[in-house]
Structure formats: C-alpha cells, structure tokens
Amino acid sequence: MKRSSLAIFLAAAALGLSACGAPAANSTANTTNSNANAAKPAAAAPTADALMALDKQYGDAWAKGDSKFFEENLSDKFVDFSNGHRSNKAESVKMIAGYKCDVKSQSSSEPKMSRIDDNTYVLSYKSTVDGTCAGPDGKSEKVPSPTQAVSVFVRDGEKWKAVFHGENPIMAPPASENSAVPPAEKKAEPKAAEPKKEEPKKEEAAAPAEASKGDANTEALGKLHSSGWEAFKNKDAKWFESNTTKDLSFVDPAGGWHSGQSAVIKIWTADMKCEGITKTSFSDAFASAVSPTVEILTGKGEADGSCDGQKNGPLYTTAFYVKEGDAWKLAFMFEALPAPGA
Image 1 (cartoon, rainbow, N blue to C red):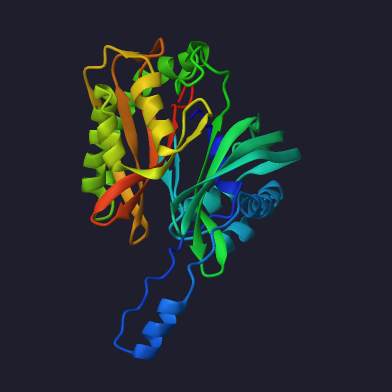
Image 2 (image 1 turned 90 degrees about the vertical axis):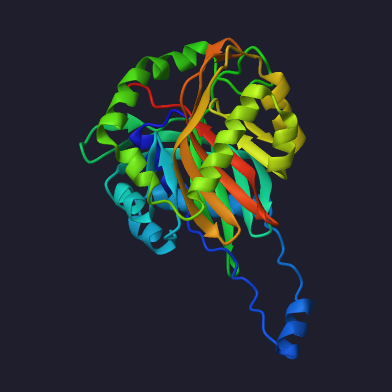
C-alpha cells in the first residue's frame, strides 16, 4: 500500500474502530445457567449493508474533524499499520485532532464481506473522496482516491465496531488479470526509495525493540507467517490449505480484493508468475489479541526475484489469525507497498 501520513489519517478516521471479542462463555456447575447457555441461539452475522451504514457514520465524523467521537468510539485494541509504523488508539485520535480537512464529497461502493470467525468480519469496498487535508505543518494534500478500503469489525455486545482499517490506492490492473502485483510504472517510486527506508530502520533499532513488546503469541505467529513466505516461494498449495481458513481473504498492494481459500491460494501458487526467488523473510513481527482466538500480526515481508515481471521488494503486512482447535490459521491479510520517497 502507498499511504502518506495523510492517507494514514484517512484510514484511521474512516471508521469507528474498536475491538472487544464477545466474552467467553462462563462455565459453571449451575444447571440453570448451563441450560440457558445451551439454548441461546448463535448471534447473527452482520450484513455488508449494515457494516457500510456504520462506515458512513464514522466517515461523516472524520470529515467534520470530530476527534471526540473517535475518542469515545475507538477501542484500546485498535491497530493502524502504515508504512511500517504501528499506531494505537491514542496516537490515532491525536492524529485526527491534528488534521483539518475540506471534504467536498465521499462515497463508498462495491461492498464485499468475509468471515474471520463468528464475532469478527472483514468489510472491503471502493472508497472515493474529493477533498484535501492539512496536517500540523499546515501543508494541504489531496486525499488519495479511489482506494480499496478494508475494515475488520468485531462484535461488542450488541454493536459492531472495527479494530483495523486500511486503504490501498487502486492501481491499473497488471497484464495478468489474476496477478496481485502492481504495474511497473506504479512500483517504480517505492522501489527507488527502498534503500533510504532500510538504513534508518537498522540505525534506529526501533523495530526489534517494538517487536519484543508483542504479546505471548508474537514469536509463534511470526514464525508461522515466515513459513507462509517460504510456501509462497515454493508454490506449496498444500501448506496454504493446511494453514489458512476456508474464508480466507486478501487485499493486495495494487488495491485488489480476493476472497475464498481456493481462489487466493491459486493466485499465490499458480497465477502469479515468479522467477528467481531464492530467499524470503518476515521481520518486525508484532502480535496483539482482538479476542482469545483472534490475533492481529503486523510486520514486513520480503522476497528477492520478481513476480509478473516486477522486481520484488518489501511489503508491510497486517494479518489476522484465528485459532481453530490448537492451530492458528491465516484468515485475512492486507499488504501494502512502502510510501514513495519515505
């Protein structure tokens, strides 16, 4: 994803973001409570239209610069991961308060939804905005548009709130219709900036320090995601079948939406034409819990070689893993290109 600080703000502000998984059932010896729990029907899944209606409320609040609204509605578990920087609720609210926007119009269309678990759903749609925003430095920038926006919603009592939001500019489709790689002219800028990005990270040593603050599942999920990169290199469809969910969905760096386990695996192992990949990596892993069975993992994935005629490079990743039995499985992933010139 190519997101400037302005687009990061747009992503955080476009929705009401909070995360509380549904409370686990309280197991007791009380027969009455047990019977009541057993008889209680499963909570209904949201509809794409309902989540889009929620989206509009937060979009309106963003356009008005209503940071108080976000202070009251964002969850402590909210995560934004933009250009390698992970932000929490407090940072996002502060960012919203620091921007002044002039939004002439905004619209959302083409909604799509996929399931992570019964209490966590992904909404993706095309976002079109005509407007500008000025940050604390007073510099006004045009809001990136159109974008493929995505929000992950969790159930909080009777409400649905979002724990993550991201947007990728929608680029012209590459030569291969099923490819998940942006066209060369769009990737040229971030590649040119790549050396500048790597050196500061090593000097600051901030990423390793941050990664050490992740929760108890950070190491295991980081290793699992690294194995996924190796499976991508080896075109190992069976690995993906065993380590992803049936409802797997994915937003690619070019602003494409892909859903359904078999369809996504086919893109990664058959449709993408890759050459010269000899090594892969996943670094700066940081995981945090949305609920006892859902985790958000962020980090940077990278491969050498090329895919669909484009040289590979770093991709900033936000991945949602769900626990099925004793195994963590990838349910949704959002990948983004480094911002040009960053």
